[in-house]
Length: 224
Image (cartoon, rainbow, N blue to C red; front, side, top):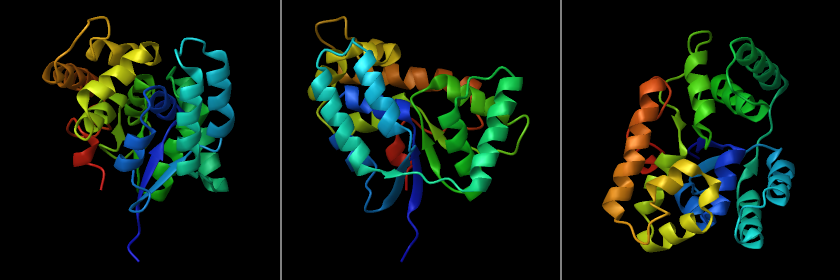
């Protein structure tokens, strides 16, 4: 049997996918029949707590339902003792260099480095910038991290633009940059302009993370 490619999804991307009602899109892009998609074991504890305290979602019950689908779809990541030790080292290295990399992101990065394979998707741009700067201190693979905007471009390539925009704008507070790209303060928006705006954010992020950010603007081109 051919080994499935490892995909690591952080808590932030799960939260935003749930907020935008993208559980179905996520399952199509990260097809568990052909990909080994894994999430942090903390997700089942952390994300419900975030939903309970973050009162800006217009339909929290709908977001909760989407989150439950995502949590039940993907496999919980089991780190080895060596990977936990590597994660602790990365976390301390980030702290010493004033980089914003939390425990979960350190664990995902440690798994990627230790297993010498995998693709990491995060909704936290600060984490991507931190991983880029860690390249100055530890050996880190190239072009293995994808951002939320690349995920959103991939979604638009597969789904109805009007439906996705409606979902994004119904919970526009989930991510300020995405809300701006989708022109959520305007009564209407053109798909080409939205993709252009998302691409602009990706291009800008690449200036500060050229070594680690995945190439291109869509995950469909880089995820096996």
